[in-house]
Every structure is written in C-alpha cells, then in structure tokens.
Image (cartoon, rainbow, N blue to C red; front, side, top):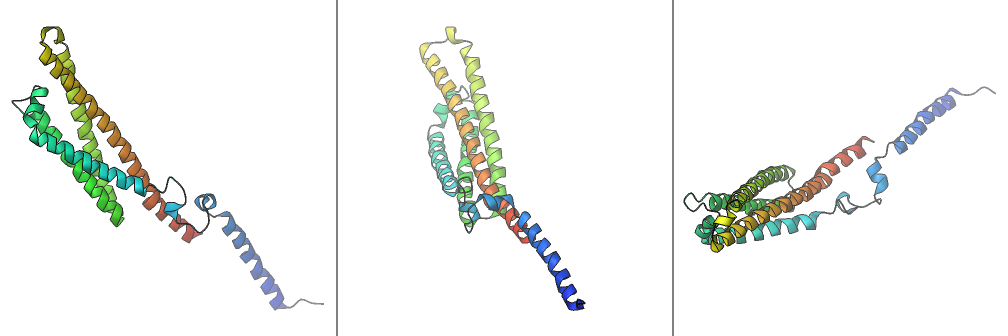
Amino acid sequence: MPKSVTEDFTRSSEKPRSTSRSTTALQVPLHFSIHKPGCHFESCCGICNLFPGVLLIAFCQILVGSILLTLILTHGTQYDELHKTQTTQFISLSTGIVLSGVTGAGVLLIVVALTENCRAMLIYLFVAAIVWKGLMALAITKIGRACVRFQDAPKIKDEQHRLANLACVSGLLTFLGAVSYFFSIVVVFSFYHFRYVRRAILLHENECV
C-alpha cells in the first residue's frame, strides 16, 4: 500500500525534534545538576550563601576602624613618641588615613550588600585593595623601625626598651590586621562572584539551552 506524502512529512519533522530534545537534555549546565531544583542561586549551596558573613565583615570594619581612629585622634602624640616620629607625626597620620579608609570601606560594603549593585561592588573591591596595600606598607614600616631600634637594645634604658617592645607589638598587630583584612577581601570577592557574576552566567546559559 503506498504511503501518503503527509505521513512522510510528519515523520521527518518528528525526527529533528526528538534529536533536538536529546541534545537539549545533554546541554544542561553542570551547576543546575549539582544544586537542588527550584531553589535560588544564592541559597542553594553554602559557598553561595555568604550574605550574613559579608554584613558581619562590614560591621566589624566600621567598629574596629572607628574605635582605633578615635584612639589615634586622641593619643596621636603618644603614638608618635612610641615610634620615635614625634617631630614629623608620620606614623599617626598614616595610621589615621588607613583607618579612615577601613571605616569608609565598611560603610560602602553595607550599602553595596543591601542595594545589590554590581558596579558598586567592583568599586568596593578596588578601594579595599588600596586600603590593604596601605595596611601592609604601614605594618612593614612599623616593624622595620622597631627592628632598627632593637639593634641598640644593650645601650638604651629600661623605659626606652619597653617603648621599643610596644612599637614592635604595634607593628605585628598591624600586620595581623592586614592579613585579616585580606581574608575579608577574599570572602567579599567570593560573595561577589557567586551572587552576581555566576548567577548572570547561569541565567545566560539557561536561556541559551
């Protein structure tokens, strides 16, 4: 019995549809197969859910930066005498600028996290990188000046030796603060990547599939 033309056309049109469906099933992004179906991108795994940590980092930066900045403003002369720069006020001025940057970056991070502005997050990362470089330079300067003073340790008096110890401790604490600040930048960058960049990529891949 001869076949009709319409039957051949419908069968031929069904074949590419089935193949396209099979290729569509194969092209599902890996990120969707890992996470649970129907959940939001930012809350489907632990590494994407960094929003509370980012807010905690921002509040800590504002709190620590404002407290230390107040201490520098009220005891700047004693701080310069501790580092033997009472004539130039180099250490207190540099520390005040860096602490102002830490406090301002914390306020900016809160605004960015609440408004979810991607470009503002880039600005924060840029500002935070500059502040971190300032912290590292300040820590190296403090530690270097303290090490130079320790070369004359047998010649100096007990009170001066105590001040040299305090100056070295101040440099080490500044270095520890720089390390902690770098860790906070890594956490914020991970939040920026997984919440904004990765979500945009996944949405684009889902539309293209």
